[in-house]
Amino acid sequence: MSEEEKSKNTPTLRIEIAEVFKPLLSETYRIKFYYGGRGGGKSYAFADSLLLKARQEKLFIACLREIQDSIKDSVYKLLCDRISAWGLNDYKIFENKIENRFTGSRFIFRGLRDQDVNNIKSLEGVDIAWIEEAQTITKKSWDILSPTIRKDGSEIWISMNRENENDALWVVLASKPDARTLVRKVNYYDNPFCPEELKIQAEACRQNNPDDYAHIWLGEPLRQGHCKLIASHLVREAFEPKISEISSPLVIGLDIARFGDDKTSFCFRRGRWCQRFESYAKLDNVDVANLAHGFIQKLHPKRIFMDIGGQGAGVYDILKDRGFSEIIRGVYFGEKARQNERYFNRRAEMWDAVRDWLASRPPVQLPRDEELFEDLCAVNKRYDRHGRLQLEEKEEIKKRLGRSPDKADALALTFAEPVYDDGEPRLYGNGRLTYNDLFTQQQRSNEW
Image 1: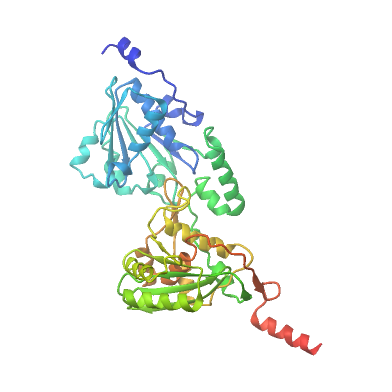
Image 2 (image 1 turned 90 degrees about the vertical axis):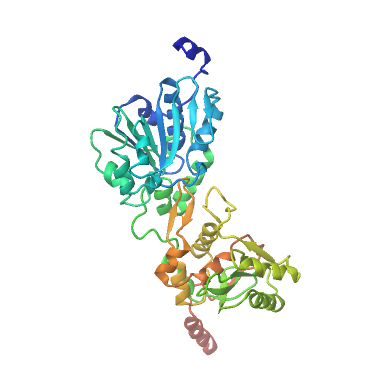
C-alpha cells in the first residue's frame, strides 16, 4: 500500500499525551523509566504512545511482565480499550496479539518468568519492550531480557509503582541512571487527565494517613517498619480496659478451620468492644454448626459472618437448613471487595476495617490476649498495580507464626458488612482509666 493510500485510510490522529510523557515519543533513550503513585496515568500514557508510534511506522512491540498466566493478566485489555476509546479502526485485534493493518506493527504479550534461553530468542527483533508492573521483575528476569532486546535503536519502556527500597529494576537502572536512561516520576498532580474523584481521595489519604499517602499517591517505596498493616501500639492500647457496658448489637465472626492444625474461632463483638473469642480444634461441620446454633439461641446476635471457603460452606448449609438464613452471611476471603477500587479482595477490605476501627475514636477494647496480638500484628501489606491494598498470603503468615491467624480472621469477619449500630459505649471516666484507677477513685468517693 502506498503512503498516500495509508494516509487516506488511517483515521485522523486525536490521541492526547500529557506533557510529562512526551519524551516517550520525541526523545531517544535506551531505557525510559517512569514511576510514581496512583493517578499518574503511566499505563494509559504508555498504551496511547505505543499505539500512536505503531501507526506511524512498522514496529515490533513486546508487552512484558514477570508472570502472565493468561492474556487477561497482561495490558492486552488496556490496549484494546484505548483502541476503542480513540476509534482507531486501523488496528486488528486477535486473541493473543494486536496488529496495525496499514503499518504492519505488531503487539505481543509475554510473561518473563515463563521464558528460558531458547524461547526468549523470539524477542530478539523487538523494537520496543514495555515492562508493566516493573516492581515485580526479578534481577534474574532482567539479566535474561536486557541482552535479548538487542536491535539497533531498540528501547525498553518501564512503568512501575515502587514497592520496596530494593526493587530490582530500581536498583539496577533508576537509582543511578546512566546517560542512556531517562527517569521520570509522575504523580496524580502531574497528570492533567486525573479525575477529580481521585484527587479528592488523595487529599483525604494525605490528611488521614501520611505514610499511606506517600506510598500510594506519591510513589514512594514502603519504608522499613511500615509494611505492617496494623501497628502494635494500636493493639496494646486496645488491650487497656475502658468500656464498662455497651448497647450495640452483637456481631459474631466465625473463621472455620480448613486444615489439621488450624482452629475454628468465634469472635464476639459489640460495636467498639470486642468482648471475647472462643477457639476449638478438630471439629467437624456438624460440631461447628451446633456451636453456632447454640450461640444464636442464647445470645441473639444480629449477624454471624462466616468464612465459607473450604469446610465453611458445609457449616453454612447446615445452619441455613436449620432456618437461620436471616442471621448468617457467607463470606469468601478471596472474593471481590465491596470497594473494589480500593481493595484487592474482601480479605484486605475486612482487615483494613479492623485497622481503621483500632485507630479511630472513641476508643475500642479488645480482650488481652498475646496470641491475638501476634495475629493482628503479623500481616504485611502491599499495593497492586492499581494502588489497591493487598495482604500477603496466609501461608506466608503461617510460616512466621507457626499457625494460622484464626482469631484475627474471626475479628476481621465481623466487619464483612455494615451492621446498623446506634449503641454507645459507656467509658470508665475519660476512656483512659484502668480498673485500678476506677477502684481508687470509687474508694475516695465513698470516703467523701
